[in-house]
Image 1 (cartoon, rainbow, N blue to C red):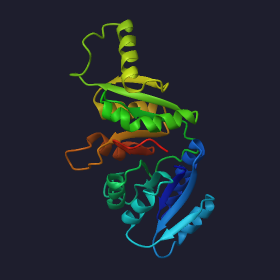
Image 2 (image 1 turned 30 degrees about the vertical axis):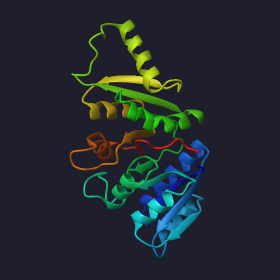
Image 3 (image 1 turned 60 degrees about the horizontal axis):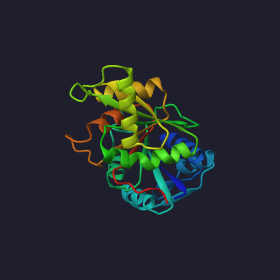
Length: 251
């Protein structure tokens, strides 16, 4: 895989998508291309030219054509915006359809978030499930290979705090065991926080000023599912990478 695909419309939010796609492409040594679904590109063409990015224009339904383009073997991830929505950063129809159906990572960009020209710090929550670790492992390896810092955060809820954590030696032993089980040999930094999970995650994202929050998920945005994903999308003022569980390693 060698391409970051920026799916843009004709609104000013396209600038945030293009800037993020270009920055991620430069950080990970990937080419960045833009895609606009519509009969006439209008301002989208100007935005793409402004960021020096080739633009592909296709007709049809936006979610269908974005997914079709995103599934091309050369595409590593798709970047799109979360603008014009009923609630702040709550996924709209196109973003929801692409994120829940595309088999590749989707990087969603809040249009009111500061543009991060040089993304070098990634936050990855780990809940102790091997499934989550397997889903985000390819992205961890890619960012570390590119020289970025990856920070993992594990949140302790009252019912999950290990009983043996009575002092520093116990905590060090627990950290070593946790990393060996879930992110062995990747060289990441592990932070722990007390719950609730969403507040702890957003606190670490802000205090560490991370450029991307990466979340492994089952691609289900039903009201009773993906609570962390939906809350982070609504509240985080930074790009969020949604990584389908079982996402294959980059070729």
